[in-house]
Image 1: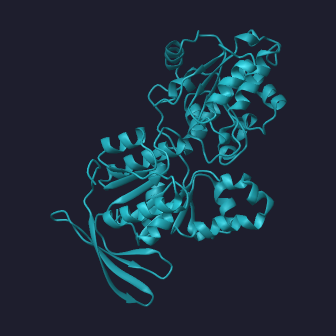
Image 2 (image 1 turned 45 degrees about the vertical axis):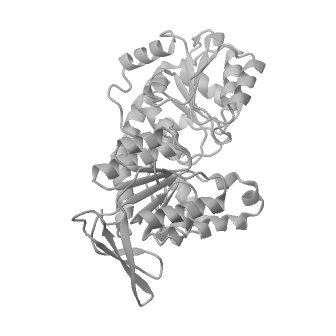
Length: 432
């Protein structure tokens, strides 16, 4: 294991079986470490017979700055604040791994090139480190590995349900129940929005007793939504105070449908733009966009920019550590996704007072309620064009949106997210 971070390992001794249960002890190898005794029942659920400290393993695919990684980083901070040892396992290196090490967590790189070898590598890692709890954010394979390694508590978070749109599932609806079957590898499945939990219960047929909803949440940065922050952000990005700016924040992937941003930009730049009062928004050709993110579709999007005559009207930032300034500088955030869980960009744009135009997928309609629902529309160029013109050109609509967003955002706090996850751990016997 040279060159890799190490945690204190937990020696596990198998004991006797009682009434369909397995009893074993996890004792810390650190001086003075307290042992914990677990009872693993016939349903695979762990119960704590005597409390002790223990490692929590967090497993996910990427290690960048996307929503799942940001969710995991918030959880990692919370666990470390409680003094919990954390083992982060990612399929790629990246800034999340750097952040984890800086927070005092151990990090291991397990490539996911082949499913069989990926599972085998995780099993070896879990058997070596003996985590008390494994929390997966990367599909069901980590849960399978945790079962094989006899990890006492297994939790899986679903960050959206892409299976809704996968061809085999749409052609053969009965296959959707396979998601429920696979999800039973975990002792508890967490969903980031009610819509995903409803799909898991009623379509995938995972019993509600195995499900919990823990919404994503954010910590509002100091100065968010102020004119000073907006002015500084625009200046840093090279924009004038008055030119209208559209923003897209997310991975450049099929899920996020970023090509729709270019289509909308082209449509709005090619026609007169005026508000409901007849007052011009601005000269339509002056409309620009910021695309903040990276991904496999970038070459295709760059080619489309030239083909559509948008050269010079789009600022490409790539993936950045903090998209807050982009959202502060923008006049309208576009989220034309094909599916979602509960996107962080939505919540962060609300914190900046920047209106959002989004498709009604995943948890988005649950956030954009009341007057905010005017910005939650199925994708069509005509419908989105009309909504964009209203949000860009009617000051009253923007002011109403900001007030409603500030009120709604109170329900989506990062500290509440961490507490909700830890409460789910506690239901399963986690001693933290």
